[in-house]
Length: 443
Image (tube, rainbow, N blue to C red; front, top):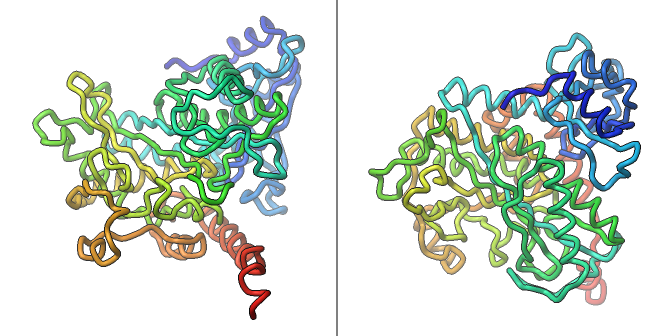
């Protein structure tokens, strides 16, 4: 796809009466940060970027080295459809640069760009991703009161949720994000809108945009949307199952017509890499204390490190092959949740898979039985390990990982470890209602 020029952006701004341009980037945890400039500042911003204080951004610079530059990416220019159309508001996603215009190593977008550069050097032109982000609609942000009691694929009566999904899809498409499906998910008031697969960098940009759009449209209707992995006890949590494949030119490197599974040797090694390194990267794709309330057996969350053909209880699933759909051959990594930083998560998965290819990892046998129904002894006998059961456990493994050091780089790695250790420490000293109910009356 040809890059948009500065002149094309300035023309779009004039033709669409755009007065404000919001410059977006994310902190280390994936939270969108933004500041606005006016149309009169845009030409200079496109040429030289806009300076900001990086010391106030989570995981960025220390105060004595705080000057940063937000350099807008012209290809990410989109008008925000929920804002007024007169004196309209647009957004552009930025690369974060050092004052000398070199890439800033603490920028999560740069972490993903580095991973994609590694793939390119190994002969892979595209890393395609199709994440499925689930979320809940709630009546407000200070309770978990639901809007509906529907279930998976239920056609609920015409209520606020039906209009919310409709408006969300329309807003996403106006922002250039193609939508394949939208439907009610398994849990009450849980929903999903699936974006069509894209190259990894564009998809990561789309994920942060998707989360903003879902929340903005919900707010417009007077309700609240949350991507918290497990907001409601006793029902399914929200995942971000991520379909992925590597391409060389227009050829799917995961497809092999002669293979029993129609999977190539490259695909087998990539999946082996995902499985081998899943514990190490777990604190990235499941980065909150709440993530591990979702990663428990029994709620469709895959905690067992295995792969399968179609079986959704495994960590990695290979969807069924349809003749003539060679380009759709892919694997689905099912443990991510939608609270992650997509730039770091996609980079971590890609590096794990590329390690598998580069080092020739052997894939284990597929597990096509329901892994939830096996006993601990049976799983042990089959050599099936589990993901970490808490953020504390996960970050301890990540801290020792050479792979994650390579993924995140020397700047982000220690800061990420420090942030997650503090989050775990803050969490584990809390006294919960469960503990008070359980112990106070009897101890």
